[in-house]
Length: 330
Image (cartoon, rainbow, N blue to C red; front, side, top):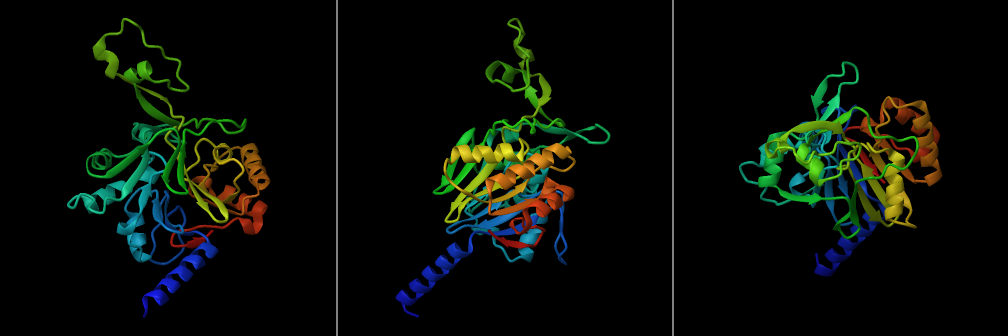
């Protein structure tokens, strides 16, 4: 085969990918129907853009690795790993990743993008018993990422990963029907009260507090400043990905629209954290999604089965259903 023929074939394949749109493969999710695949409460997506391949979240265990093998995906060829926030069901799989790479210390140097606040010590209250459960990143995984991983910590606002690929964090609470999640907490050291403003906390550091007491910690409401949205600009418009949308799905989308004024949101793939929400919140969320005229919506993970059914009924063919092992073209 001549060089020019090969080049023409490669260009044709690239144009076909552009025409088809971005490809998503579900590696971890709450539902699974295909034989030989594993599911869990968590989220992990493999995605292919026009030029790049990314992993979005890692679920809560090594399930994403097993399912990737089943789908014949080589995760060593990724252009980046994006962790949406510091909860166990999105970063827990990092422990399995570290065990796989410990001996070779991440030779591929795959960048790992995570908000710096994702390493806060995070907790959640059990919805039934009220027991306090650790829900953050495990210490061994955090240690490996910081010492051996190609870690890129983002901060608030808009960060550019590469051309047409962005991360947005510190999502503002703006709507009147989406509030700070009540059962999520984080550990806050007293020294942070001196140096940083912690939303939702009115504690003031006494001037005469002894120095050794600055390491005391307190539990405070977690406003999920670490949650970051992945926004990829494709020919059809913006493709938006959210791990859990803890600040509220519509707050997240309004933040995308204010960050990319005048640009059309083509697709939304998201855990929307609507499981068990009030009927009013679900109703207003669906109405807002309809008003935004998004071409493709894929609700999954913490959206909850009842909310997914309601979105599907309201959006019709615009709503695509996801499960482990499924490939979705946006």
